[in-house]
Structures are given as structure tokens and as C-alpha cells.
Image (cartoon, rainbow, N blue to C red):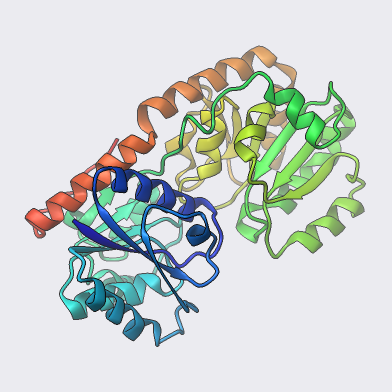
Length: 370
């Protein structure tokens, strides 16, 4: 089986990291993978288990992306096309597949409603559309995708890379020169509006007043970095909050956190939530989008209403004050990851879907995988 995968993301964030793990599992199962990605893509540089085709991919208004993608499909003659991202890839990838007569599947990762008329056009070429979470399933149906084509396959995390590690606490504090006794909250997210770093900063001064040893490490990069640095200074949080950028050694650092804060207002599923859970780190998050598919309130973490800043602060303070509860939630989170969000399960679910599409492309039914 040969599959052409299309991933338009330039950075090795959640979606691209999932593609990397999927390609590795498929290659191990003797699937021939071709990856179409932008020039300079971090995913391509990570040497995934695929033949790389790097080309310009400039977004929805890059109309020339359609003929370029058609040429790739004609050159490689795949059995299937799998489009993994937006930025024009979802629109032009589906059209290219239709023009070349290749069956196509799309993964929808974002929590965002779409106009029904646009959804009917964009999703029409796809024989299946994968949703990461229940909320994305509902949005796809609202956009006019019939039930028979909607398949839920959640993201996965490599539980061997992200795992509990008693030595990580000291390693994390040494890496960032933090006091040994300081409770450390992590935030792992791009520095973009919907992740709501500024909202979190707004509730931190009062929390810091009550617990002055708190430290917050924000992992990630993005266009809001300069604005957030100014806000950290304006709120008098320079001692307590640091923007530490993208870290390739995140698996060695996350297990050293006391907890993960995830204040996002919209979230398709949340790979950072899976990584923290896999490392045995409890989460405080807003109950939005696909987050409740990952975090079970009171069992693997704490969920707060998306507009409840005071409640979010109370949840953070509660977990910081109760190490036994953190250990209990973290252990339950790790166990759930191993059962429901494994990379092996992700790969098996995709192989099963591909097989059904190729054997009987009109008979795909809505399922919940692993």
C-alpha cells in the first residue's frame, strides 16, 4: 500500500508530531509513505519514515498548490491520499485527489465551526473525515458531513518518551535555575490568542501573593511572545513566570512539573494534555472543545468552566497544596493513556480505516477508535 500524506505545518507541533508517529508505525507495517510538506518543514528535517516531497505551500490563496499536488499524485500513483492539516492543504488536497481519481481521507484537528456551504464543498472529495474528539465530530456533522464519513480517532502519545521519572524534578529545576523547593507549573502551548496565556497571567498575581514560591514555565513559541513579555513585566511577575521557548528535551522536563495548566479557550484535543498525562503530571484545564475527552474531572485532573478565572486559580492552588492528590491524579492519568491513547492504537485505527476505504470505499461507518 502506498499513501501520500500531506502536512502543511512548518513546525513540529501537535499535528505534525502526530504525523511523524503515524508514519513510523505505518512504515513498520510495510506501508510505503510519501510525505508532501512545505520547504523547510521541521517534520521533514525530523527524518520521518517517508519519502519527502518538499514544495511551496502558502495557504488557502495559493491556487498553484492544486496543480502541484496533482503532479505529485500522478508521479507517485498512490492507493490513498491522507491530508493531515488545513492551510489550504485540506481544500486543494481533496480536489487534487478527486481530479486524479485517488481515494482521500482528511484529519480535522481544530475546534472551530464552519459554514455549512463551505464544509459541503471542502469535504465532498473525502471518503472519510477523521475527527480527534467528540466536539469536532459534532462540528463536522453541522458542516454537512454525513455520519457515514465521520470517524473518530483521537491523538496519541508515545508513553515511552513521556513517562514518570523521579529524577526529572531536580533536572527541571537545574535547567532553569529554580529554587529546589519551588512548586513549578508548566504551560505547553503555542504563544497564540486561543491558548490564553494572557488570561492566565491575569489570575497569577493573587495566586503568587498567597504562594510566593510559585514558578510558571511557558514552553512554546509564537507571535505573542513580545506582548506576553511586556505583560509579565507589567504585572510584576518577572520572578515567577518565564517564557522558555520551544524545547526539544520536553520529554525529560515535563515529568518534573508539579502540574500542567492549560487555559486554552478552544482546543481540538490537546497533545500537551496527553504528554503531561503520560508523564504522570496532573492537569488543570478549561472544559472546552476536546479537553474533556482527555481530562476526567476529579480523576485525572481538574476541569474548570472556560470563563471562570477564579475557579481556575482555586484549582491550581488546591493541587499545589495537596501532593497526595497530585500523585493520585497523575497515576490515574498515566494508566488511562496506556489504555486509550497509545501510538500503537493510533496506527492500528488508521490501518483499519485505510483498509476499509480501499476494500469498500462507500461502506465506511462512523466509529470510535481506541
